[in-house]
Image (tube, rainbow, N blue to C red; front, side, top):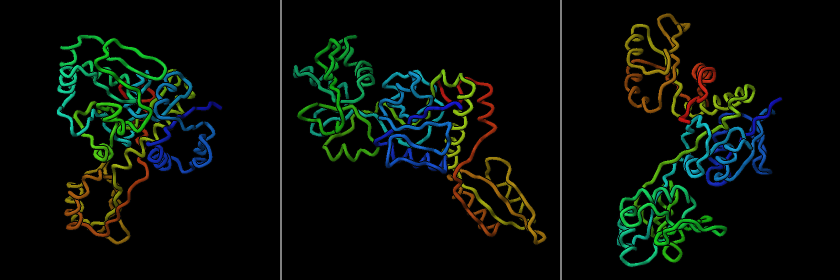
Length: 333
């Protein structure tokens, strides 16, 4: 038996990840007792890890697949396959500073601190993304050229431009200004915590969500690849199921054609005759955002509407085709 090692994030993404897994697998056990979780599948070894570690661990082959935020994949520069956007844990990576500050952008901040002959201190967990972001700033390049900002951690110090300093944060980054930092680069979902700490957003650097990623060598292994695509199928089923509605409705034969012509569907609806002559049942999947639009038509033409939220919708033929034909299944590489 080939074991596929699967890493999932602990911490802020943990609850949402477990809700996702519970929709994909019916047997999720062990969360309250251990870092090792069971999905009821002996071919999958699941473990909770810090989200910052997962891209690197998958890249290095310590795990075959993982769920990781796009922000940490970019930060760690992990060379992994991005199989699927899971469409949860949506956050923005932002630059924020105290509301009392006289600047409204990174460029204004660089200019203001340069004129004051004071070092600009930015607290962040995202050292690589932050350095790249700062060096893209035209005002920074005009003043400092290609010199990298000084990056400071407890273990090492690098960079040549001490006028701008990136300070590694170990959490509670929003609490650093104004005493310990002049600005922060951090992720935010709603902005509430920023506001509570008297910070305002100056810029959005990137948007992030949870992605399913895989080790490239694991995808090249025939047995592991099959199990990885089993995982992909189940998780994609949840993504698609969350955006869809399963509807059942009865309609008279003389209204059937009109109803079908105005009914969106992922595939052709299933139409079945009822025991009562002249009546048919329609069974179909529609996008959630289409439901309000078609409801007036359903009320006018049909009877007995039943609506379910499907737990999963599995596009088996699409995933099978990707598995057989492409080494880069659903991602950008």
